[in-house]
Image (cartoon, rainbow over all chains, first blue to last red; front, side):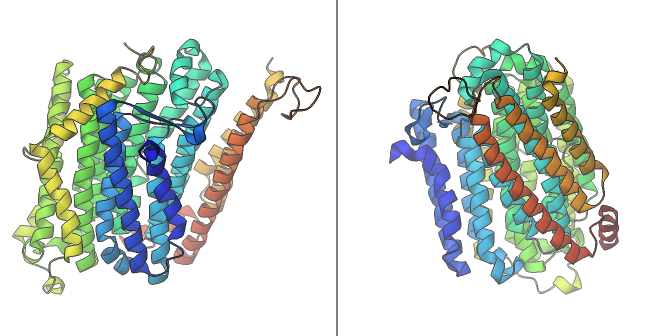
Length: 498
Length: 117
């Protein structure tokens, strides 16, 4: 049983998805989904323990040896991502029944859970697999269910947002497919480990160069790197609250993982950073993303929009860490992947609670909520402080390592710009705080009560995690460091050391 | 040399036609048509690269020594399924958009959205 954990991680939610259709009653389906997601979480914890104790786990599907068969390969980086995805999914699901009952009509609720599990399975699959083509398949499983999930939103703009995401997402995925095809053409293999060994032999050909360009652009579309982020704000703003909380915390992180996996492991560090001026390119795009998206966020009146733009800015920080391309820089990126999942999970869930009570997340509706929904608003404030990077929150930890990495590299201006970018976060978080605590409630909202416990419990689990991992950084830092060092050692330890 | 690789030229031309339609057309159905052409070009690309000069179909039988690589065929079978699923989801969305907005022209939808704000 323990030996089969890597495949169980993916197959459990994948098989459970169609089973939801047999259990018709929404409440039971929700319980079932929660249990399945909890199982996935348990598996990911066991996998992380196993990886930290005894190194990379290699699992050949159906007993076929790589590179002929598909191989699942879990190292520290994979294990960390699996843990983030399944943990967030489980916590978000705790609030799902309450929220979904209100936001989605009863005959569609079962389908919601089917799609949710498929999306979860897709994301876990992308991370667990060690086969390049398998990545594409899982990417499409998670994306297609994501399009449908977003279209479940109440507002008709959800449909339009979903359509735009479908067009952009498919172009991105097809680019990745082209890139994988070109790689296969040159090496005759799809196994990532095998690719990393064979690509250096043909590294100086135009085909490999083209493959690299296609993969990078495709992945960047998926991770909403500025200026390829246009699909994200509306998709997050109009999707059902639960979907937003789940995707904001996980979907772009999976794409970041792909970026790291392809550049560091498959193409290899020395190729990736010399074939394209990746370092300077990502540094500029990352910083531009931080400033442009944060500035746009300041002017939003729809708070879901506000935090969606803030997500694009936070992705900017991850990309800056990536562009520094030292062990510390990459570690900062991975820490921020972990920490940002906690922040945005908490924030969007809290917005879901506001949506549940008020039915809108426009800024003026937040007036006076500080007194009416004290626990929800306190969660938003702590999440906001974490976004800014105030000490004792997780946001501080990742910013700290990011600035450390910039300074280590001698990039003083970058460190200053990162700090300035945080100031913009202060502005947009403050607008919300001001409305919630210093204004009297709208007449229509005077009877609004605190959100139900089914919301408060998952929100506060995430908020406490925000604080806990901001103080006791052992787990997150240790894993991120191990993953980062593992990446610099190369996937197989062959040929990619710089 | 250049003519010998004519299938790759077709791939590139189809890919660009599809991509252009997706970007340039405001009609949602036409966009999906463009997307499908774009994806189809990739299918042809995979099939082309599997071809081994002088090779036959990959069947184990007497007298067959040289055969084309069957793996890209299998891969692209999966990609075709994915492509169909994408088109289906896309078209379903267009139907819902038509119901909600009364239009499938990008400009009109955007105009109506701006009015809502």
